[in-house]
Image (cartoon, rainbow, N blue to C red):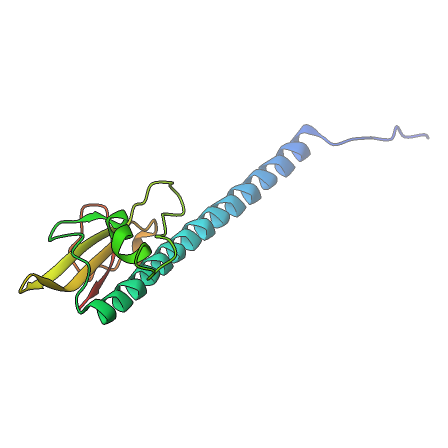
Length: 147
């Protein structure tokens, strides 16, 4: 006449709930990490654009681009004397993931010891955003150049 009341969950019910929570956590974490990569790549592209703008102002006032990366890829910190000290940019940006400046610069199109072109390069994390308009160093898969 009196039934014994069941209290609690069975082991199978608990395993199903834990599996669902694990799956949702995995999906959420993957989406979050992808969003973080996209944000860092956007920052890298924005940083190269800032450096590009400073180089264009430098060329407008000096008639040529900086010769800091004379035909070899060099770290953008080599532009510090020309761009930061010259007042063309407040500070040279650095990579959002590492503390090392991982942006590269190369002066191009030499004519009468003046440089009329350049390439800037960065390492982006998302491979589908690869864009190389000038041949960069190994691992640098996003570049900006002029002309």
